[in-house]
Image 1: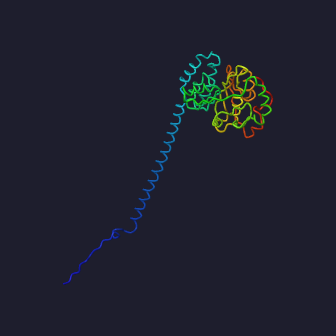
Image 2: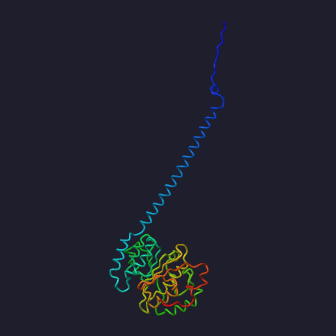
Length: 306
């Protein structure tokens, strides 16, 4: 009697009952994908918020750290003014006027100083996070400063003016006020007798926040006088690119004739903020592209004396 062997072949599809299982698997897959997307988006958003908060906190901390603590700045001012009665030195009140502006920019100003004086180290310390540049008539004093305090940027220039030439220089300016002596220009290429054009080239490109005129010598007829630094400060403030729209300009010993005449003409009475003892404080704004067509002051009449 013949027997036939029977083979049973199992196939995965035999255990599937219609398409319901496939639909179920696809549904779970979709749920998983949506969950993954939600989790990823939530993590990304919270990470960004945390990062932004952290950056804000870091910036706030950096700003507070960049400022010299007030007790330290007060101590520096105190010791700097200990011998303020000496001839030519600033008084405590005068130094505090400049220090107040330095403090407002967090000790991170672009600070240009004409005249290497007893207060030079004070200005550099109060402006510890900024740029302090000194221009002086004495190559010897500049060299000595660089040897002792290499961190301070200093340069010497040769002045061709004399206090005795004040009114001759003013006549020259009036004749050239719309040409070589205009209030908005590149001083490097100026032929105005009042322009200082032999400083290092990069000095003219800096957007100075403060300019202090405490030199050169101006106490005798043969001294260079401060006519050229005052004129140059007026042009730098009006011609600057970038930075704040205004520049604080301080003129020490402002009641001397040359300082008064030039401050009136190039910094302008309308820009005078205050006078603290013998320190004049001006705030000079930038000029527009039409600066070459106008004078330094909005009032063309001769201003009153300070």
